[in-house]
Length: 484
Image (cartoon, rainbow, N blue to C red; front, top):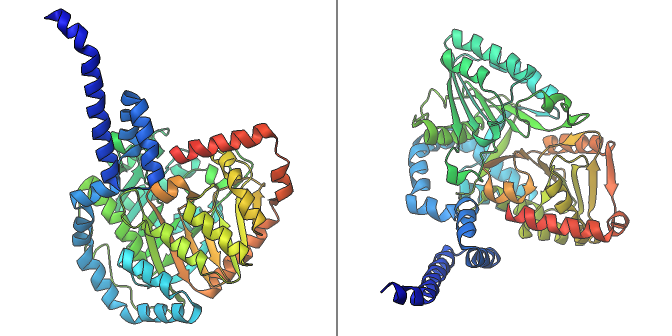
């Protein structure tokens, strides 16, 4: 009997492998994803059965399909819907003014796209301030937190442990003593390297501290958003995390260039909504109440229409990415982009090349002093067609460059957390704020032009002068960047 089993074990292995391969094929085909990705995972799972399964578990699962099967989006709509619909009804006239502005300037489809995917019409943002440095952001943020009266909601990808965090914690402790409610939701992986002594101090004083995306099988999918909402009416978002290096560059860089935005008014409810939805996933507390979404009245004259668009690996529409593609495709004069990394998906890249070929002034500004060599080398493989089409690429050399902005034709401005790279576009939780206002767009274009003084232009001649080794290295890094 034992001898017969030994003789038949090759047949058993062949049958087992066939069943394994057939199961893998059925699962991947049913995912209905991009054929290139499906074929790539088919190769990995076929030739590396054990390692491939492990890689697929952490990096390859179709979380959009899983979210639909679990009814995640329906539950979120049911939770946020009543509160948000009441806010939208309250400011229906202002929303129509935003749509009218879009019709006049040719951005009706962009506004409709965001309304369709996010159920979010334009809302008024008042007293908008573009903050082009960590020093400017944190000076204001400390003042605003110190004046909080009811609630402070904080969400960051990274909260370090240094001089700046000590100052912020001291202010938060003071607010807690006066009865202000403090909630903090930070990304789990992003905060692993930093000591939690200050956060424990806050928790002991009554703050509610939580960490987002703690599941092992989601370790590759981070919450990259940065949100602060104070008393439900004052909001911050943008590229700047919490740490002294985001002010002065720290030990790694001579300086740090970044962009945040601060505004008041009804549009802050969109930031509060994103915080509340993630908070409910980690704490099970429902924040959709008038205490966190108060009425903002009367509206001052200094308000502009705003739409907030978010994205994550679970989202069906990837609305933030689609908004970029649509807005850039409608450009007539210029597209000025700032992103520390540039590993775009095909739609964004082809749109940039197409409009550059059509005579639009396409400028990309990214860091010239990289923190991630893989992404930096990979970016250079995308420069060729863009430069040949007439686009321009600039490396910011004064320090590390971390801003995430987009201006279109001096009319439209977007500031947020989304890099133009595959991780931000497909995997991370991100957000962008679209300001439908020429004044803000022109103001930011002036900031862009000031940044050019600290840049080196990366020309087509420079690209063609790269050594064969550099070209091969960059191509190899591009493959690695796409896999991650």
